[in-house]
Length: 268
Ligand SMILES: [Zn+2]
Image 1 (cartoon, rainbow, N blue to C red):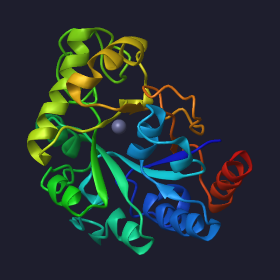
Image 2 (image 1 turned 180 degrees about the vertical axis):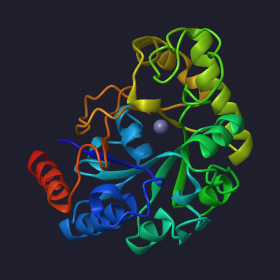
Image 3 (image 1 turned 135 degrees about the vertical axis):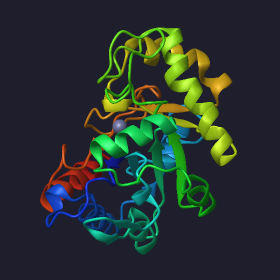
């Protein structure tokens, strides 16, 4: 009895081979899933099963697709200064009739700093695609925090004492800055608050997973939170620590992906 949640990053582009290019990997993986006959589900459906809003049978042996960090190439084509026109993940979703959850960074200031410091100044972290993505019905927008507690930001988040990891988000003041503030911003942009949260860096501060999110869930409209722990989801998984496997990290080839599918089929 298990399900699998995959995580891809649309800033891993323009490389010749599967291991380093998430666009090659996603298309190959979706084709493999369709050949396997295993069902493609959504991260929200898995979270709903974990909190008892739907039977586990709805998602058992299912595979969900998620994208992290909110580069526009999740959904929109992009004319890149040195790579030319790049096609989005969405093309593969349409080709294989799948849907995905994009976990986006809310703070416009953080996204602009990341464009300059990590993306060679390419304007790939805008938010104008969020609403059209939701309207396309192939995408759900999730919360990937206010500013990722990223080291590109000056100073520390209120209540936190470090950056470059999510673990310093260890009290209510810091959690509200990173999570509540992003819920509000994304809700204004897409019309309703996200139902799902993904921990930046995959780091799970115990205070956030054990205390803050369970207590704030109904106020914030959140159903579950996702890690990058690298294993499958079980019916007994804590909805505030839902594991995912990351492309390029937990698997790097079609053969390794086939092994993941086989373990899901065998455990199902
Ligand atoms: Zn991230």
